[in-house]
Length: 271
Image 1 (cartoon, rainbow, N blue to C red):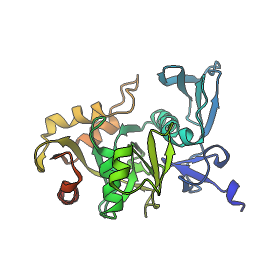
Image 2 (cartoon, rainbow, N blue to C red):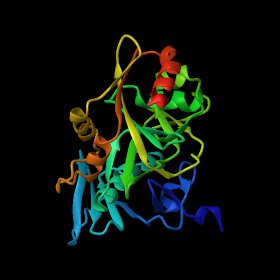
Image 3 (cartoon, rainbow, N blue to C red):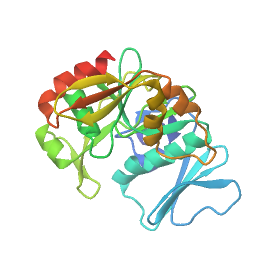
Image 4 (spheres, rainbow, N blue to C red):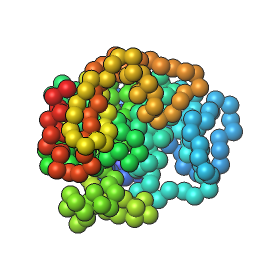
């Protein structure tokens, strides 16, 4: 098969390679559902479509049954913007329509399954993912969006978008592309050995004077999961958040420098 026409995918969906390319996506399995992604300037007006996301000058709609998703906006993203962040939003819209859910989270793949990593904006999530991938040789399952449906998590595009200061510190400026109006350095990751796996626990990253690990009480877990959901579905479906909240959750506090990362790695993997 011509590579340009071979099936690609991410987040457990088969995607059009002529739209999203091959470089950062995975070889799609034949049993992944196909997702027709439409990019344009005109909002769907036919019955059966509903809006999931919207922002300044753009919106994402999903068709009933999740066979198609539409991104509309006044300014069409370039090829880098299509892979991220647009793809995460359209995949999340289809996932919500299929009864799943999505978190603004990174994740690493371990022998046991997926460890979700949550942090607020500016909380060092992507730089932590980068260090774990480059220095600890761990398998990064997803950088920015964790997609969960049918009881398992699905791997995102194999890339990291780093802020310039983190890229400099990790020595990636010569090995990464400048993307998102040169505001990020995009580094290509290896393919993880599994593209779907159950989530086994969650780690919340916070800044603090030293590395500490504490268990998050069960009564607080759902609140943390809800805070990091990519969208708040209008139907109030909490199946996935409740399932994730039932899993072990730890709060990992660490200083704001890379010197503590070996301790962070041990804490993250120890559960």
